Image (cartoon, rainbow, N blue to C red):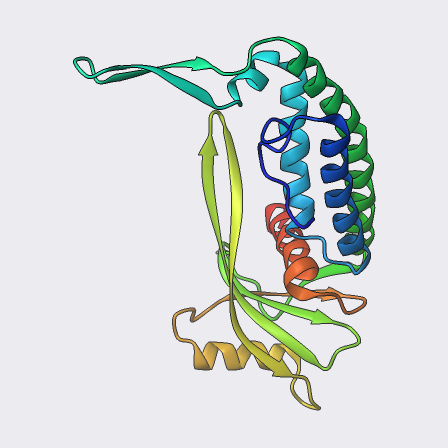
Length: 237
């Protein structure tokens, strides 16, 4: 099973063995992906499922609210629809609680496996400036390269800041520009000069090389980790 619906615990047939089968099939699929390694979007989705399950574990009312409701009255005069809960706090809730209690440690173990692989790969990645540094670093180029490869992929990146409550977060968007073959005389510095020459939208771009010690699936592993490494690097620069 490649995906798990957000309401997988409460939708459909609420039976412990059935839900256990769904969960284990999903986690087995993730583990197989992690070994390849294809970490994303599976690892990110698993984190979201785990957090939702933790909230359900802490709030019985949230579980009840996740069930579908039956329309009981239509108040057309006040433009309101009235519903009643199909499932009340009964034996069904006990079965759901058993499913949640079983699923949490299973998800925790798979999360740990994925995080261990992520941490190992992250340690194999380095970030270096290319050419002369600039003060403006929220937009520029990222060269993505595996040390064993004769090719480098060029991305244009842009950092944006968004606010949630009292906290601020930085997000990064990357757009693929081109794939360049490394040959004698075509250094990373020379590639940067060619970018300046060919793309006038960034006349003095901040440019970094994100290098991996070995080749990895780019879209599902290397690029997502490289983006996070670049955000961290820019924050400390």
